[in-house]
Image (cartoon, rainbow, N blue to C red):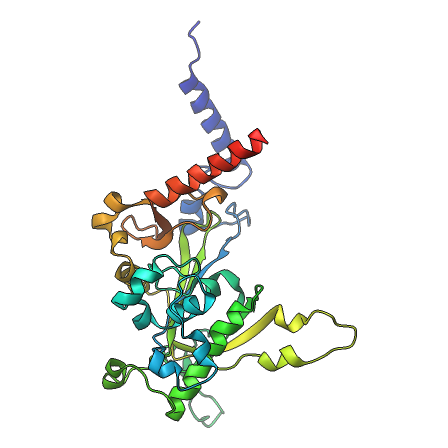
Length: 359
């Protein structure tokens, strides 16, 4: 009698699965997508699971407000940011909102040692981390026109095209505030500068004035991912965005029997948007080029020599900068960090463990 091998068992298992699926009307076990895409399901036995998308990632780019010392002196409130102490929150807010200031030779060296500011990122990281919801994304709509009725009131409706989402829209971003009101400070500084520059109390940087560029706008990238939290399934970009208001007045209201001001724990910020793009592959290129601009080591030609991909595990949360890998057509979002950062993290973890064991 011939001995049954593991390959034989595997073939029997596959054949059994295939026969069970076909007998139940589900089609081929190993060709479910092909059957649903190509052949009619006469018994309503579609075996494929419902689509499952996760909220994914939101990245808000940094504007280029003119927060130079001369500009800050035009307003008493903004003067609180006039510091070059890299370990102060005021310095971090100033750098996040003024990319020109953060890249100055005399400042960039200090920014590298800041505990609150990531100089190699083009994004306002605290806003991404504290964002709790975002709503108001417009739907693509085809405009139509209907002809006048004929003798029997018959008419015809035909398509006229759309605005291609090139109009102005409103998004609402809700944030979970952290102790110290950092989110409020960032948004209020942003609003204060917009007010000053539009009224002529201060000015934008000369290159922005010459280019007739709105220096106070940002872009918002939205990436929806699959259950692995790695593959981007849907993507969007909002361009020309800026905040319009902040519920600062609510901080001074008093409600009966309220000790903690609940309105300052979570609040919403309305943003104006001047262009929305959906599912355009160029969004990935824009995102990667922006990431490389602030950290050239993320470029694929240098990446293997300078940085490594961070493992997608909880232990390495808060490590790495994002880059989207489109080479294999998977649109996978990866995070990369320097070896020295990961080694320091592991060394500190081992030291802490040894100290706990010793105690």
